[in-house]
Length: 384
Ligand code: PMP
Ligand code: GLN
Image (cartoon, rainbow, N blue to C red; front, side, top):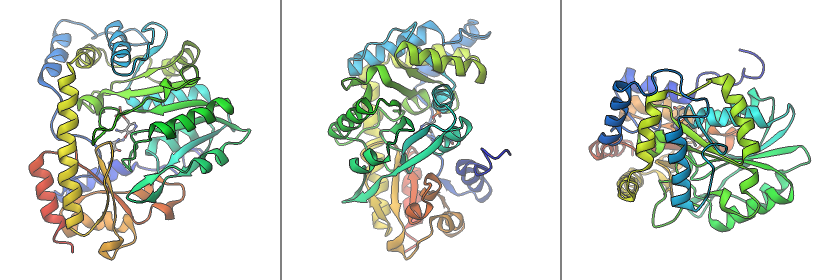
């Protein structure tokens, strides 16, 4: 492994999912649902395969049906208008979207400000692009991990090229408020920054709150690359279909990088995801309500099992504090948990540059069947 990537070995998700397989433990580590997305969407993929749509290289930017569906989704939900031909790009999941955006937009040495803890591919992709990451730590305060806007402002220097934002936020479950986003937007305009905003959990926002895309704020549409994912929104993480919306100059840049990463994304799934994005609002509401009930089940169960619980406002993850259990090292805790309780979780420290800040926190995923979550809770209660 070269110097740029030396610090990034195997991702924690691979390590923990392998542990789940070898120990037979319930896997609440890696975030993937244990039930697949809508039947009609799977049928649409089968139809596309059978009808020979997308079995050969699809168009580089994505099939027109999907680009139109992405544009329509952004308009319908957020009032954001994007031209499917010049402002939408289909990617191999959000992971490629992040990689292509950073590779396209960063010069070597550019600083990238990102909210810590962060999804693990951010650090590796900033490194691959030759950038320098500047973490701004979300700090626990009154039951949630909060952004300190002064710290964010202080993190921006003359070398800062880009803010890498994620809301709803993995792993903390924080959803940035309209006021916080407005402040981020103001900062981006004032310091002339680009923003890559990872909004893959846009449909998983709870307690009546709403997800507000950063691109809707004044001055942001022209400087924002927004990212979505069918893995998260439709529970097809294995399909690896994601998308970007951005103004033409930014989109063209990201598309140039994508050309040489994957060239195109898998064809038949794109047609299916186009149909998925056109599902009636009832689908999105039911998905959110289902996940909200699961959040309640797991958050309550973890609290009863003795964990400190940060009840998430969004995503399908709950971050816990293991200190009330007399533990302090999330890594050691997660490595022993399958043996001790038959459950797999992820240590939040892997999402930090300042590892010590994340040491006592452990993340559990609740995108699992109710019976599985109930059994996990039953097992975790034996820890206390
Ligand atoms: N961003 C965040 C915040 C994520 O949690 C994930 C993982 N699911 C991704 C991006 C990657 O999404 P995809 O599976 O579409 O590549
Ligand atoms: N995004 C998911 C998570 O945070 C899984 C991603 C992955 O396995 N790379 O668990």
